Amino acid sequence: MDNYVRIFDTTLRDGEQSPGATMTSAEKLEVARALARMGVDIIEAGFPAASPDDLEAVRRIAVEVGSATHAPNGSLPAICGLARANKNDIDKAWEAVRHAARPRIHTFLATSEIHMKYKLKMDREQVMERVAEMVAYARSLCADVEFSPEDAGRSDPEFLYVVLEEAIKAGASTLNIPDTVGYTTPDEFGALIAGIVKNTRGIEHCTVSVHCHDDLGLATANTLAGIAAGARQAEVTINGIGERAGNTSLEEVVMALHTRRPVFNLSTGIDTTHIMRVSRLVSNYTGIVVQPNKAIVGANAFAHEAGIHQDGMLKHQQTYEIMRPETVGVTQTRLVLGKHSGRHALKARLAELGYNLNEAELDKAFERFKNLADKKKTIADADLEALVSDELYQPREIFTLDGMQVACGTMGMPTATVRLRGPDGQMHIQAALGTGPVDAVYKAIDSIVLAPNTLLEFVIHAVTEGIDALGEVTVRIESKNGHHSLDAQTETQHARSYGGHGADTDIIVASAKAYLSALNKLLVAGGKYGDAEKPAEVAAMA
Image (cartoon, rainbow, N blue to C red):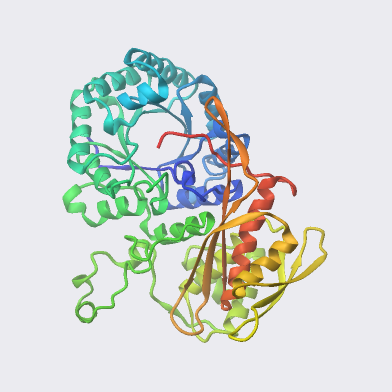
């Protein structure tokens, strides 16, 4: 058994199924490029049968990230598409991933009694026949086929052995064992993997994978238990996003194996210095803020406030830190950059932070940098990261903020006047009253944009310390109109949510930018302004 653990990232498929985490095709492509640069072995780019847009997004990733011609920094991950165990799904998955140098089809079928009885309405014999038939069909199209027995954590192990043997005989090269509902404990899951490795004939010719959910907060522990029992592929997401309570977190699994190498004696191909940057990218695109005490990538992960801890850290770093922040791309260096700094200095520092900008992007970033330097004496790396994310990773703008003015206080009603540039290039000015300055700004914007929505989430935090700190705002809105998506045999209507991100030294301006970012996504998705982005809403294996 080798000592290399393959990292299978499903941020763009399972992670995107988080409520409010829908990404546009362009955003998915940018995340895929970042994952490839980081060294991910397999990227599950989406669920092609879910919608024509998701198929096209996976195809673009296969062409632009998974091909030798376009691979970033020479990295060449396998590009995977998910498919239910039917020919239509498998055909669409193959249509999307076949352009990659290393294509993979990932098909699944439930094996737990509760799923077979109530969801599939199939008996054991029917399930085994379907697995054998559909894995063989996928293998006739693609040399690399992965099979998952959905809800394996609650399946009869003896039945699992038989089903997995059928998948192996049909041509599966990877067998993924999902704890779909996060039900098992580490001891149970480790024993399940050990039993599969020991009792499944032909397993020595396959890679055993694990895919765990965090419903009981045990996803990472279960994944590590599965790896210790013989699994050599871990299915993970950035920041642990995913259905319900989320998936196993990439950064937690990778850094556990990295930090405790003497215990596991295993390695991955991940360049850990990219972890923080990719975490921020995914957070900004999805609108899902990383909690401050999140392991590895949370704002407090390398912060020390208690006097005893600070004293220990001053004497020796390892007293209270088991890994160096630089290992995951966190830097506490403050830049000596200000209003007299030039473009070259800015470009060099951004390159050190992992942002390789072209000339047009650098021009935009430099203009924002100069404006920020006029307002702040000290500019930290976190300021630059927020600045670049806010400027370069925004959706196509239908409406842009051209100016605003707010009046608020203890006397009178909070009032906001907003000037937006519309898609026709004309200026639109509107004033509104609100319960507070942000509410007034949002009402003024709403009266111009006319895109009915509900504000689901509004989060604000300072990027750095100090009264002149750059403020970041993340919002999530929900379309009131909804949309139709096909889920198996029935058509249902769902409301769709969109995330937005904005940064500015004026927190009201940052709030307006974040709201407009989310609204622009909503407008583009609606198709009125072209380039409609439709979500992958078909229910899939967790």
